[in-house]
Length: 112
Figure 1 (cartoon, helix red, strand yellow):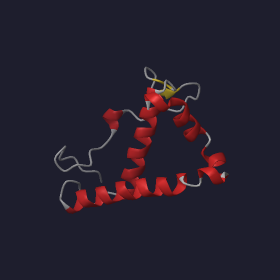
Figure 2 (cartoon, rainbow, N blue to C red):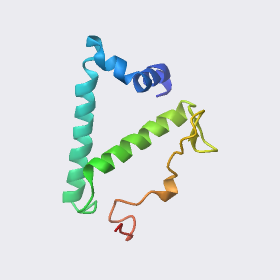
Figure 3 (cartoon, rainbow, N blue to C red):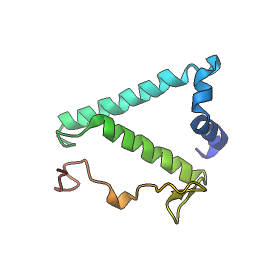
């Protein structure tokens, strides 16, 4: 990320515009491939008993994706770490201590 700060911010901020441009047609299929890898990995974890059987794969993938996106924003200096809010936006970022574990070994706490 450090070497590609500008490229990452352009990709994240200009996604709709880039999606319309033929020279960036590879981005959509690449993102779908990445999503498929995450889904397959989470499903294998369920099958192996590493994750709860009732794990919502899509929701978990989106959570992971968004956490990574937020981490990138923090790394790039776009999020105020002390207030846990995007700089200039006022939208709270989820605090890690409030996240529920998805691994069977991490906690015996169950949702629902």
